[in-house]
Length: 276
Image (cartoon, rainbow, N blue to C red; front, side, top):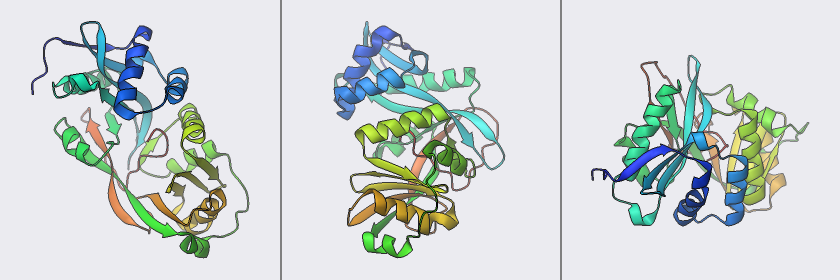
């Protein structure tokens, strides 16, 4: 459907926040406590695009600065996060307007790519129609506690989670975050989702029965397994792993919109822990 001319698109201003919170809440079901956390610590008006019907914000998306590490280089990128339209305005093309504007603004700001992780499998087709391609992957491994116990090895030293994440991600193709972004993501995870732990060479987080694991490939069996077993007494886990791990079943793990002629060559690229 063609977008209606009655919608206006612009960057956000502080007075839009009540509308942004409402649209977020009805779209994702998050609590006021969670929204307070995001809007006080991560929200930046000039990195937020909104669509208005009259004076009312009815659709929105957030652009979070990041770096995309490729086979050849590290390039400036934005991570498109929490795109949402109020239910009364869905199906009218308003998100298409925002996605078009996001490409324009990101190009103007010198970004070479926009990255996103669709909220579910059905959205891959939607974003493909708007110029995105599946460019990231990961593995999912359903493991029992007994299987992890057989792999686990003693951890010699605990590590600073931010430093460990940045070191590990700098060695892989995929999305890398600065310290402030990782600090926020770790605090958000600890406050609302679950637990996390790190050694000198590995990082794991647990939410319900799902676990996210990062390490050097050769270290996974020992340190990640040991960290997971120490975090929870769950009998089994659904582990999310980088695509180059020798465990689990491959699955799509995110999309890329190219904004320039600069070559972007990715291999086993991974969208990391922050802001999934």
